[in-house]
Length: 167
Image (cartoon, one colour):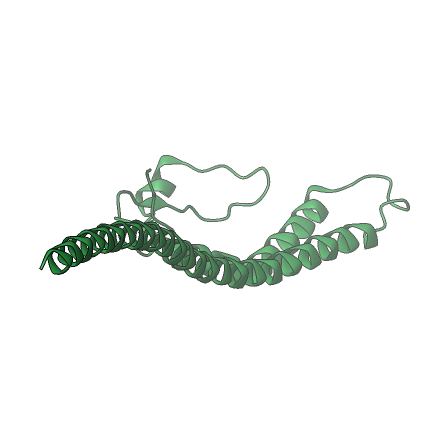
């Protein structure tokens, strides 16, 4: 019987040691799980941010390409004005008249209005969400050296030419 009791005590001791070893391993597994879970959270956050960044980058790239096309047109327009000015031969004229300057400026203004119309429409589209805070009155073209009297201002109508954005 003593042998059975000794064997039982030895067995109980070994079971207790095995239990404590299993508890330690379970704690280690729990710690490793927590560390791994934290790392997975960091990785998932990084992937989410990367996807958001790529979406924003695509939007900016698209806007950049559109703006690039607009600025190419502006560059062509400016070089066209330069060519137009270079074509005017002033060397054989002894004086430059006010009328020739007026015609040249009018031609340039009409070219500007035609060529910059897409840019103006783009700007007005950008401003559609802004609250309307002011109206701007646009006067008539009176030419170089012209004068306006007070009666000329009385029949001007206010024209909404844009909206003011405040930040």
